[in-house]
Length: 116
Image (cartoon, rainbow, N blue to C red):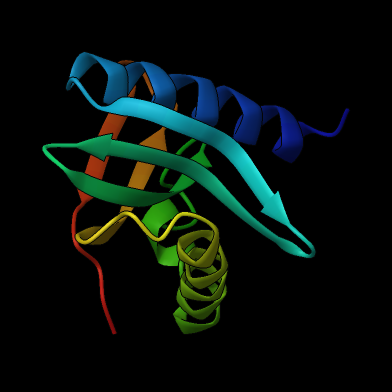
């Protein structure tokens, strides 16, 4: 397995623990529909969260959140639209980014309620 895939998997494991500690209910991990994937879908306080997780081993070449560009946000919102067609019961939604740097100690940076 390549290094960046291992880093991503480690980040997603840490992200799950992070959100569980904040009392989010994890509904899906790596939810897929056709070519789209949402890293984490969770709920808290009657709000549905679509969460993009980005992980790097260091900030030497930029921060993990810098990897989330307009194209990635559009991809995330398109996938969320499909999810909401399947699960129309959600009235309140939010898009979040969790950036994780695998330094010592691990650094978490949550960007809540991202929009264009």
